[in-house]
Each structure stands twice: as C-alpha cells, then as structure tokens.
Image (tube, rainbow over all chains, first blue to last red; front, side):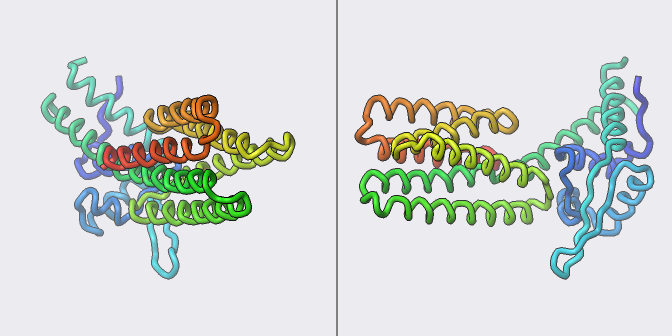
Length: 97
Length: 184
C-alpha cells in the first residue's frame, strides 16, 4: 500500500503537481500560467517549485523569448510516480483499505 | 489525515486537472473550421471555375491555410501558457500524408476527380486515426467525410466537387465550432 507523500501533501504543492501531471509527458507549463491558474504570488510559487525541484519531482528550465525571460516547468518521471502513489494513498484512505 | 480531508484533496486535484485540460486541449476546433472554409471555397470553386484557374486557386488556398495554421498554433501555444512538442508531430503527420498523396498522384497519373477523392479520403483517414488519440468527434468526422465523398462520387459525379465542398466543408466548419464550444 502506498503512503502519503509529505512533500506533495502540502496543499499548494499538491495543486502544482496536479496541474503539471495533467499535462502530457514532454509538455511544459509557463511560470505565469501556473501562477495565474493556482492564484499564487511569484515568490510563493517559486518557493514551492524549489522544494519540488530539490526532490527531483519537477524540472525547471529558464529560457528567453526574444528579450523576455521565460520559465518552463515540467514534471519528471519520478514526480509523476510520486504523485500517482500519493493519489493512490488518498484513495486507499477514503476506502479505508 | 481523515477521510474527509482525503476526499477534499482528491476533489482539488480533479478540479485543477480539469482546468488544465480545458486550457491545453482547447483550440483544435479552430483548425477544423479553417480547413472547412478552405475546402468549401476550393471545391466549390473547382466546380465552377475554368481549369486554368483551379490549380492557382488551390495553391493560394493551401499556402494560406498552412500559414494560418502555423500562426494559429503559435498563438494558441502562447496564450495557453503550455509548450507542447505535439504541434511538431501534428505538422509532420499531415506533411507525411500530403507527401504520400503527391507520390500516388505522380505514380498513377491520376485525373482531377481521382485527385480530389484521394485528397478527401487521405484527410478522412488522417482524422479517423488522429481522433483515436485525441477526441472521438474527430474520428467520427473522418468516417463521415469518407462516406460523403464516396457517396457523392457514386451518386452525383457531375457535381462531385460542389458536393464535397459544401458537405465536407460544412461538416468540418460545423464540427469544428461544436468542438470549440465543447472545449470552452
């Protein structure tokens, strides 16, 4: 039986991971897109992304579009597995397994 | 953590996932509308215009269609805030099918009607297969497209171009608009 993941369990990180995992593999989300989708501030999102990046659950790529900096975020395979295990643990808890 | 909290978490996950899917999947219908308009103009024009102008008209329509498709793809990618390698695959997919058609036309020296039917059947096949990986409506449109084209060829061969222009162009425009509305 899977156990709840302490890192993903935090509400904001749970929503960040849910948003990223719902994209197809190889797809990346723009920092601004995530910030607006989850209604977060730049600093708040950055801090949570840093935690997830340290755990190797997400990969952050900084690029330039013309002269404007762009930050793209995607989940790693490890992140997808960890999220799936966390969701499985939530479902087990609901069904009292 | 208790069961209620777990349920709340799962609900939040589903909500976020739904919102992202609506954002990332949206816009595909506009491509169907665009190519529906192109087919409507092109095939209707082929019915009435002199052969001298038909080739030039299709060249203008196809180049414009491809340019607008690329512009639409880039614009939608920017607006959605999601970068996806799928657009390159889609472009390659249609280019491969187009190249296959050109080879068949060249190898078998097909006539105008055969080229039109081949083009429509290839597009229909493309939609059927593409729909299997995206939205069922796209497969249904592809299948209906093939049926309409073959039916028009058999039943009203003298008005074949006009028939497929109106029927298939209309089908693409209608289903494209439905998909746009469906995707929100």
